[in-house]
Structures are given as structure tokens and as C-alpha cells.
Amino acid sequence: MIKRLRQRFIRIAMLSVTAVMLILSLIVNLANFISTDSDLTDMLDMLCENQGNFPSRNDFGIDDTSDKSMVPNRRPDNRRAPFNQETPYSTRYFYLRFDGNGEPLLADLDHIAAITDDDISEYISVAQKHGAGYGYYSNYKFCVVQHGEDKYMAVFLDCYRELRSLKIFAVCSFAAMIICIVLVYIPIVFFSKKAIDPVVRSAKQQKQFITDAGHELKTPITVIATSLKVLEMETGRQKWIDKAMSQTERLKDLVNSLVTLSRMDEEESPLKFEHFSISETISETAESFVDFALSMGHKLNITVAPDITYYGDEYAVRQLVSILLDNAVKYASSGSPIDFSLEKAKKGVLIRTSNECEKIDPDDLDKLFDRFYRADKSRSSKTGGFGIGLSVARSIAEGHGGSIRAECPEENKIEFEVKLK
Image (cartoon, rainbow, N blue to C red; front, top):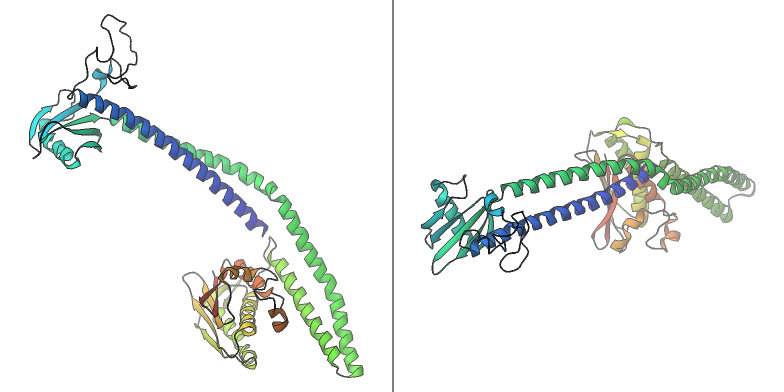
């Protein structure tokens, strides 16, 4: 249990850190893309407003008599723009004019080297298919605007460097994220033991108490049982003695179950694994419940797949089957049949029991495996159980790397499914 608790703590902590780092990386990359895309859009807007050309120096707000150094300027509409007097010489672009049928009217390729006359029809087709607005194609961002009736202009701006920078930034940011996650993993693993130390101490004290109490109770329980038998031999059988012996046996079963649960929660599993025929083991165990089920008014239908070999603890598997069938017999509706089956799974085996029962709230299904839990408090006196058997069954299933679950396929029917891997 301690090992599983530590692993769960590490898993939750790492998932939280990974989620935060991933969200942060996505936000930073999204902000970078929006900023770059906004700059490209501003550039295209300026080219479209000036019919595919850069504005004159005066339109940039640069006086020919002023200092020639590179200074940021404002666009004619007074919005901030990432342009300066060197921008026209460092920007690669071309524009095309065409009609509604896609026939080229004018092509200006003077500011680009990668595009030739043979490529004009391809880019006109892209612009015509896209329609008015902005878009991306290959390494270009383009803007299509309508000029007059049935006449269009498309400006294609080379953004190879910008897109490459975005990709490099994205790769570097995600690489940094992975490195940070790995670096965070080391202290989390190192300090996880200290983080769960109070819980571990509490759990150890609880297990030690249960183990010590179990051993201490076994002696007086044995003495009481022996004394009752001697008393019965001397005085004859009496109902008071029978009741006392019955309660003594129940107390003995409770102590054994608590000790079993305590041992199952230990770091070192008490299970002894070996290869055995699980088909024969389960068949023998299930057959031993046939007469008991009939005496309680239930027909036990057993379906076991033959010749299945399994690697696990044979005694624990027998105990698991006994718990499931004992639970089914005790809580099955009067006169209803009980179905039990074993089948081969992709990994391991599947064990199922199903029977009719009183209506159970679906919210209570997972709680059935809690220690001492009862969906119906009144069943305690009816069945004589403690509500601890299914907890033992879950511990056995998890000890074999599997799981156990309960579901209600119908309103008054319950089914338990155990997966042993």
C-alpha cells in the first residue's frame, strides 16, 4: 500500500506539473504566433493600401532632411507598425491582379526571386479559391482584396524567416518544458517519501495495531471456544452455549480477516506465486458451494473454461472465489439462481458472479469494497457477516495486478467481475 501511495503521489504531482508547463508553453507560443501574424498582417495591409507597393518616405513620416538612422515610424493611419526606412529593401513579396475568371491581368515579381511567370497561375488559383481575406500558402501569407467590379488583387508576402523562427521557438520551448519536467521529477521522487511519511507512519501503526490485536485476541478466543466445548460436554447441549460458540466463531473469522487485510497491505506481498491449473482450482472451490447454495434456496450455475493455467497464489484465488460465492449466496434474492463463470482474457483471466438482489443505489457500488461498509444496515443480522469480505477480495485481486468491480446490469441484479492478470 505504501509503495502504491508513493507512486500515486508522484504520478499526481508530475501530471500537475506537466499540465501547468504544457499550458504555459502553449500560451507563450500562441502569443508569439499572434504577435508575428499581426506584424505580417500590418505589412500586407500597407501593401494593399498602396496598390502593391511600399509608401513613399514622406508617408512613412521620414523627412529627407532628417537623420537617416533607422527609427520606428507610424503608418499613415497613425497605428503603430513594425516598419522603418529599411523595410522596403528587406521585404520579399509579389502581387497579382486577376479577374473573376482567374485570368491574370498584371503580375509584379520584381521583389521576389523564388517565383517565376510559370508559377503565376498556381498562386492565382490559390487566391481565387480562398476569396477575400488573409491566408497562408506554402511559405507565404497573402491578402486578397477586390478592386472594382470583378477585379482582384492578391499580395503574397514571404514569411519563411518568421515561420522558421516560430518553429524553432516552439521546438525550443517544448524541449525546455521537457527538461524542466525531468528536473522537477527528481526532487519530487526524492521528497515524495518525506511528503507521505506522516501517512506511512499512521498506516504502519494501524497495521501493527491490527496485527498485535489479532495475535492477542486469538489466545482468549481459543480459550473461550475450548471452555465452551468442555462445558457442553459436562452439561449437555444448550442454546446459550450454541450462541456463545457461534459468536466466538464469528469473532475468530473477523480477526483472521483483519489480519489478512493487514498482511495484504504490507510492502512485501504475502502472496506466493506459482503456476497452477486455475480451471481445476476454481471448479473445486465453486463445486463446494453447490450444496450450501441449494440449502439457501439457490441454484448455482457454474461455467468454467477448461485447461487454463495461471501464475499466482492458489490459496488466495480459492479464498477470492469463496468470498464471491459466499457473498452471492447470502445476499441473493430468495429462490433466485446464481451464475458463476471463469474465462480466459487477453491478459490473465476473468471471474464473474451475478445474482438477483435487493435494489442497490449505483452510487453505493464502489463503496461495497470499503471495509465494514453496508449498503443496507439491516442485512448485518440477516447474514451474520461483517462487511469485510469484499475488501479482502479487492486486496487479493490487486495483489495479482488485477481489479474487481461491481455493476448493476439490471435494476435488481448485481454482477461482480474480477480481472486477474
